[in-house]
Length: 102
Length: 248
Image (cartoon, rainbow over all chains, first blue to last red; front, top):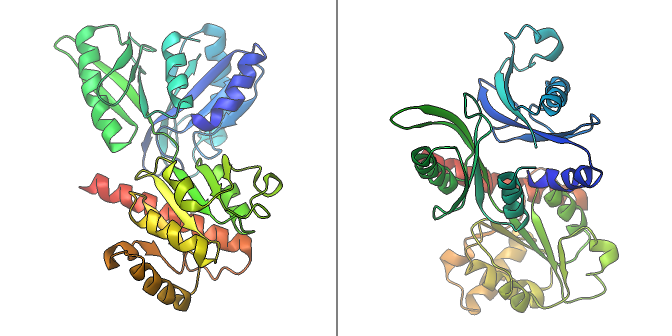
């Protein structure tokens, strides 16, 4: 979280909406530990990481939707996901990400 | 932004050890509680008993310095929460504003360390060379180190190669709770240093805390490579210590 703060503050100064995604659970092998975070601005910028690059694109879409609906969401990604080809984890693990508009 | 979340961010900015509990699923999704060591809290998950049980579980995670997903139960319900533990940043103190310290500070900053460089020689300790350090102190190490809160998450690297500066810094470091103490120099240099440190009153067990030659053996030659080997050793010590703790 700490490393995201400077960027988060800048977005808020620019009156952008902000969402934060947190890796809350990993199953099997996963490239980053639970607690990993990324922040997403309403204009689609992102900082941080929840998977080492595998699902960040999909998380940005979830974050933009969460900012529109003002509702948080718990999302799972993994090899068995129907989106496996586009956003599946190459490591074969499964992860849960909590996405929340601030 | 919600007041509870702002409170969490303020605590992080103030370098406090703090945890944020968020309900991540179910009807209370999004409810939040900020918890500090000792049990002080701010916000609510929406039910006093739920809050009480969440604080208890969170204090365990704060003690372990580990975030965790958890189920918090009351007589009437179960809430799935994520407990996000945010420790204050670990500290790296480098005694010696030498060339190798420049990339070392860069790597440490990338890894989230709060960095301090200490050197009494103002020709070395310049802001041109160390503008990227959180703190640059021109002064003798003992008095400067005394003013820094050294804890178990602190690493101290002593690299001036000048015994007038290095030796007192090492005496101070070896009597501090610092997790990592490293000193530059070959085996022969360190053997000579050990004799001097004993004469300065350090016990052998205290001297044994010093990692010398400093850094993991990766055949480092260039200053940047030496910096990598030192930061790698600091990571190894930190991670292996926390792995041992969680195995207990």
